[in-house]
Image (cartoon, rainbow, N blue to C red; front, top):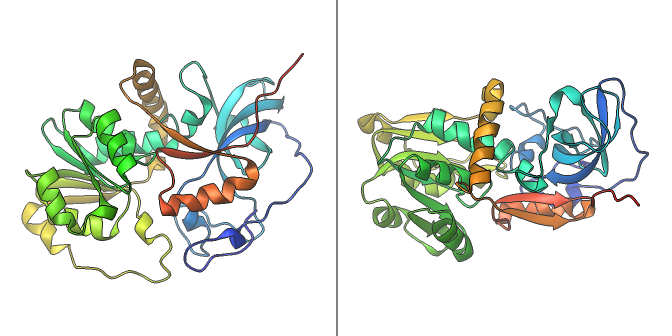
Length: 333
């Protein structure tokens, strides 16, 4: 559960593990044994006592997020025990989900953790964020910050499918190698090994930047803004560099640079595209099955290690989607 609001970066004091009775589903609900749960950067915002697009948690609330699991009891005609589903649940061994809000999971398409990544909210965020907000054209240069994460890694691959040159920022040499050798990025920059981001962009994106997909903010974004081309598009998806700031950061004033290039900057919430989720899921599933899009999940074992998995997001421990393995499949004799 959520034990206390953090000052600055969260630590283990923000979490508490408790035991309780297995909940009982009511009409229209499913009792799901959680197999995997998702940890995501946006959850840091829910720890604040402030209004945001995601409702803040009260101290004492169970931690909540996307889960994949097996139906063990159904009070809905839509699902039977043994079915695999994904939806919004809690960090727990068992979670009650509204049957109308879950989606079925097909393990023949991809392993279950992928339904929290490329086939879940992060994949849909990449799909709509790039195609609807970024509006890439063949020949464009697309720069992605947080490129080795769950969203950024999919953004880059979709951009390549659209005939773009793709450059990613990531925080380790292993991530850089994954982006360029496995995912097909044209170039990648280890921002922890580079002192001058603008000079690095001159080498990686000599023709300037047409689309910037921003997951990070901070000095990387400041540098990219100086390289935007005429009519560039910026999709602001996340600002993880600032999620633990206690005050409002004040950096270089970059807005005047948007005037001469007439760049468009637009915030992105994937929920705005909820009526089109099926479209994105079908297309992403086809790309995964065909091998056109690769994916990777970093799996931490054990519900008691979920806080560690969440905190690791802010130190860049994960490659691809960070998930927690909660339970093994049920076995029968």
